[in-house]
Amino acid sequence: MIVTQDVKPTLKKKCFLTTCFIILIFASFLIGLSMNVSRQTTTQFFLKLAQAPLVERLLNDSQINTTINTIPIVRHPQSRTPFENFVCDKTSINRFPVSSTTPSTDSFDIYRKTTLEKYCNMVPIPRRNYIKPKTYTEDEVVFVIFTSSKFFHTRATATRDTWLSRITNYYFLSATSYPYLPVTVIAGAGEDKLSNMKKLFYGLQIIYQQQMNLSISQRQKWFYIAGCDTLIFPHHLLKRLDGLDYTKPIRVGGHWGTCDCLGPNGTKIPGEFPSGGAGFFFSMKLLEIMQPHLTNYVENVWPRGDVASDVALACLAEQLGVRLTKQVGFWAHAPAFTLAENGRERFHREPEPNDFHYVGPDEMYALDEFYVNQHMDRLINDENWDELIRVTRRFVSSHYELLRKKRRECTLPVIGEEVKLPTG
Image (cartoon, rainbow, N blue to C red; front, top):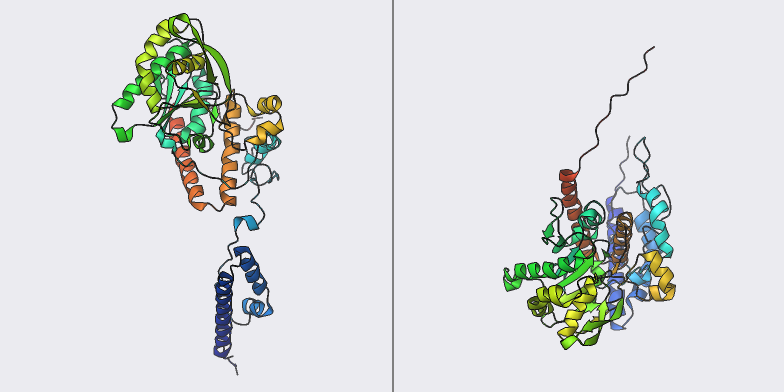
C-alpha cells in the first residue's frame, strides 16, 4: 500500500515562518529609520538575518517541492568591491574563445594583450562617480573637423568610425568631395597645410549661413574645432561648458599659448590661443560677431604664408575683445607623449581627458575601444542603469549605421580558385 504524506501542515508552517521573517525585516527597517541608522548598517543587519538558522531551514528545506521567491538585497555602490575594469583587470586571454578554426589576432583578448593593455598603466582610470554634463547636451554642439583628401582613407575614416559615429552634428571641411564622408567642400582652398586657413574661415561662413536657415530652436549653441587626428570624448568634453552662456561671445580651450596679434594701424596686441590640435569651443554669439570679419581677415589681415589657423582665429577674437576661457583636460598629443611630457602627477590630476591629438588611425580605434569600456565600467559601478542603457543603445545604433556605410563603400577582395585534392 502506498502511503501519501500530507504536506499541508508543513506548507502552512513554512508560510507562517516566512511571514514572520518578512515582518521582522520590515520592523527592523522602520526602527532603523526612526533611529537614523545608516543604509549600510541596515543592510548589514539584513545580511546577518539572512544567515540565521531559521531562514536557512526555510530556504534549504528540500522535502517539499515548493519554490520560494526571494528578493535580492541591493547594496549601495560604495559598500561593495568596484566592478572590474574590463580591459585592465580581466586579464584572462580566453574570455571570448576563438570560435573559428582559423585564429585571428583581432579577437578581443589577443588584441587586449597586444594593444589595449599598455594604456592601463598610462592614462587615468576613474572607476565610479561619473557625473553627466549639467548645462549642454551633445546635440547642442557642432563638431567642425578640417581634413584633406589625402587623409580620407586613413585619419578621416578612423574619426568617422569611432567617436564621431556617436555625434549628431558635424562637418568635415575639405577642398575635395567624397561620397563616403559628408564633406563640406571649400572650393579653391587647396589640400596642403596652408589650406586650413581658408577651410576654417570660409567653412565657418558656410556653417553660419546654414545655421541661419534653421529655426532658432534648431540652431546649435556651440562649435568645436579640431583636426581629423584628434580623438574626442564628448561625455567629458561637454562638462567644460557647464555654467557658460552660449548667448555671450565666449571661446573655451586649453593647452594654450601666447601670441602677438595685429592691432589697429599695424600695432601688435598680446593674445592667447588654445591649441588647434587639442581643439577649442566658441559660442554661437562669437560666431555671429566674427562672421562679418572672416573673409577680410583671412584675405587682407593675416599674413598669407602663415599656416596657424588656430592662432589666426584667436587673434580675430582678441581683436573683437573676446579673451580665452581656460579649461582643463585638453591634450595636444597622444597618451604616451602626454605622459612623458607632463609626468604622471600632472597628467592624472584631471582624470577625465577631453581629447588626445596626433592620434593615428590604428590608435584611434584602440583608444576609442578602451575609453568606451572605461565609461561603461564606471556606470556599472555607479549602478547608473539609465545612463548605461542610453550609452549602450546609442553605441549599438551607431554600430549598425556604420555597418551600412561600410557595406556601401567597401570593395571585397577577388575570390581565388577552389582548393582541390591533388591528382595522382
